Length: 317
Ligand SMILES: Nc1ncnc2c1ncn2[C@@H]1O[C@H](COP(=O)(O)OP(=O)(O)OP(=O)(O)O)[C@@H](O)[C@H]1O
Ligand SMILES: [Mg+2]
Image 1 (cartoon, rainbow, N blue to C red):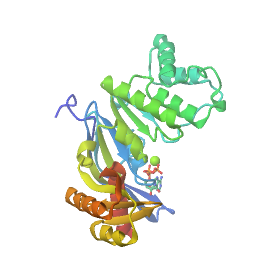
Image 2: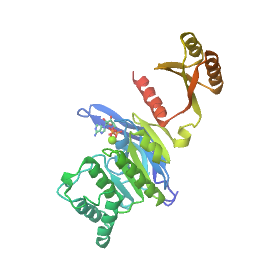
Image 3: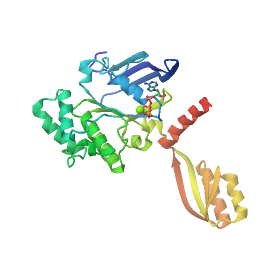
Image 4: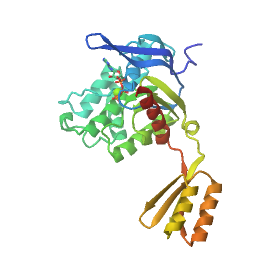
């Protein structure tokens, strides 16, 4: 396959083992990881703390070598100079020169990534606008909040107008407004045909912006897919809220419901399918109770994620 139509990222049976405790203990951080990332997609890399997210990102950035297995970025080794020039990167704990202003820092980042001097000023200005940091652009970064630094970190990753943008926990330190603005930045990058890979442990953010999601748990990529495939849109259960139920009818609801919970005057009856909904309705009619609401419950990414985390916990114990 030529490098032109190679996926942006391709890994095959990638393993990374760390040695800790004077090299005595082996920590497998990535286990037989197979992954492909196509041009133009926004990929969310989701996993709990210590799952191996940063370990993979460091390998993709050429900062660390795999213990075994293969990895290419744009069809080439990650350390290849030509590859590096096409990639923008926000590390997990970026280091900022705190006596520089954001504008100076971005101009420095421009110089380090070979952006022509004549373009650096305009590039910095438009990125400061993109990340909502124009007002503080000429203040020293030592006065910045964590969220402000995060925004400058994102701007820095985009300074050389890379084709592939890799962000390790880009939403750490951002408040809800910052998160919303980050999503808009990602939408903007996608529209411009960029490929984005970012790690997070926050489910809702992935749900809104990613074309595909990979779930990594304890070094294993346990699931990869389009969100529409991972999350069945099917209704998993129904929750019927019934008011005015007296003692003897409660038992009847309990016979039908998978779960019955009292909340004040209301009985919340969870059932599996429409037929059971009908039975709940029939009991309510007979009991002279009122149906307050009927809510279909769909599987969320959270349910999905928790299912894997629980499996993992069971495996360990
Ligand atoms: N340099 C290292 N030496 C030894 N063990 C390491 C090293 N770096 C990471 N690990 C271990 O490898 C595993 C994966 O760590 P990694 O930093 O990749 O996880 P992560 O998914 O990025 O976690 P977080 O969400 O906390 O950032 C963890 O068990 C971690 O303790
Ligand atoms: Mg990490």
